[in-house]
Structures are given as structure tokens and as C-alpha cells.
Length: 253
Image 1 (cartoon, rainbow, N blue to C red):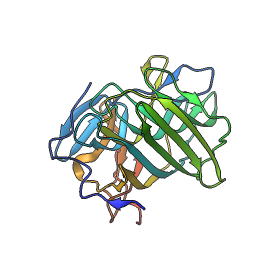
Image 2: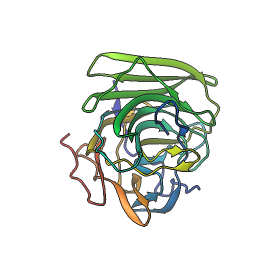
Image 3: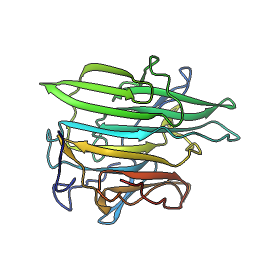
């Protein structure tokens, strides 16, 4: 059983500044956070929003997990993209192992695609998981032994799941629960207009997260806040994320 962690961050200064999925025919990938600011009150990025933090030192992140509700996307005049995912690394380094769901508006229609990815390779779609808005997903990434890691993604609404063991040699010192504007054709995409969504039961290294304001990140594109997370819920292991600049209320625990 998971135990509560006293804090997500090893110390108040643990965050380090640095600085994917569409239709199969589109060159879509994911990228480390393009961090713009990092303060005790949170961080901002050009491609990420959500919660993230350092586990303390290289190799100290050995697992990450979380649940979220797949948001819907609204029609837009051009192709727009968003991805929700759980991962290790990419927040303060150039490595990344992750799995999640893309929500995009492409060619006049909404698309929802499950995927996993290890940089620098492109994402791998998971066709056996036909996800839909409102479905509740569970993601789990864990080190098994040596450089072998397990990636698991389950659609708890349908009961279908996917698991794969892969080689990963990243630094393994940060953990993330993210809504991303993925990279399309080599450039950060315009973020899709997604409905408010919720992460919950977020955990790492066998402990529930205990989020603080320093872990909270807002996405900024074109000088505007385009994706904004709530404050943590009452037990500090979940949050909401909304499209736009307005901060949503935290979900009920």
C-alpha cells in the first residue's frame, strides 16, 4: 500500500530550470519542459502545465504513477494538440520516459490517442487502448532492475491495459503529472481547447505526493496563460487543470 510522503521536493530549492501525440501521419513528439520562470510560488513553461518536482538526486526517482480523467477537446479553426501524461525526467534535464493520452483537433475532428515514449525516440501509439473523453486512466512507470523499466497504461473505465518493459538510462531525478502542448513538425503546437480535467492519487517511489505551490506550473504561449492548474486538493495528491488563464478550483479528495 502506498504511504504518504512528507514532501514531493527534497528541498525548497530542488527544482532546476532547463531550457507529443497526433494522428499517425503527423510528426508529433514530446519534449522536456521549456521553463520560463521558477520560483517558490511555482514555475511557468511554454509547453508544460501541471505539477512537477525533483526527488533529490540522480537515480532517486524509481517510480511514478497517477490517475486522470481524459478531457474532451473543442473545435478550432486550425489543428490544435494537447497531451496528458505521467513521467520521469524532462523537468530540469533532457531525458524523459512517459505515457499518456493525446487529445487533439485535427482535420476538423477530435482525436484521442494512447501512447508511450522514451526520448529521443518518437512516441509509440497504443492501438489496443481506444480511449474516449471522460475515461479514467491510470499510468505507472517503474524501474525493475538495472536499466529495465516497466511502462503501464490502463483505461480503468474499460478495464483494458497495456504494459511494456523498456531500456531507459535517463538521469531519473524528477517526476511529473502534466498537460502538454506537444511538438508537431519540430515546433511546439498550439494548445487544444480542452475541458477541465483532474489528476488524483499521484504518487512516486511508493509514496503519495504531498504537493506544494513550488510544484505548480502554468503554461504560457504568446504571452498568455493558456493552461492553468489548481491548487492541490485537500490531501495534496491531486489537482485540476483548465484551459485558459483562470485557476480552477481543486477537485474533491
